[in-house]
Image (tube, rainbow, N blue to C red; front, top):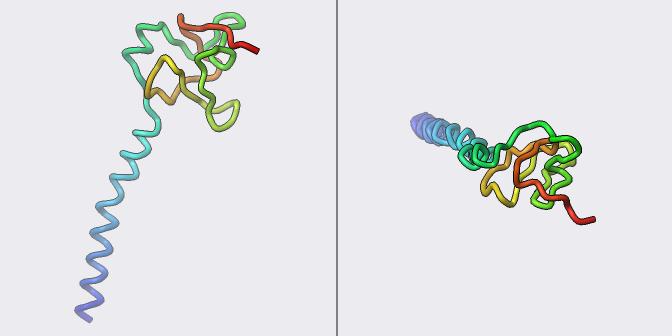
Length: 93
């Protein structure tokens, strides 16, 4: 009986230690570079027909509607495909 209680306590403490890691991992995967966004006047809405998803700097997300990244905003994974900033350059077709 003692061995199974000890094993249960080890498993429970290991699980308790792993829970915060899940939240830190999710936060690390969804990152924003606020300082660069501000300096580039980024917004989540397009400027006429100019949108992030038709910009040369756009790094697409998993699907065309998912948020992606930008070559100019390092580490930012929350760029809207319909967003815009002053660094917008038409993508070559």
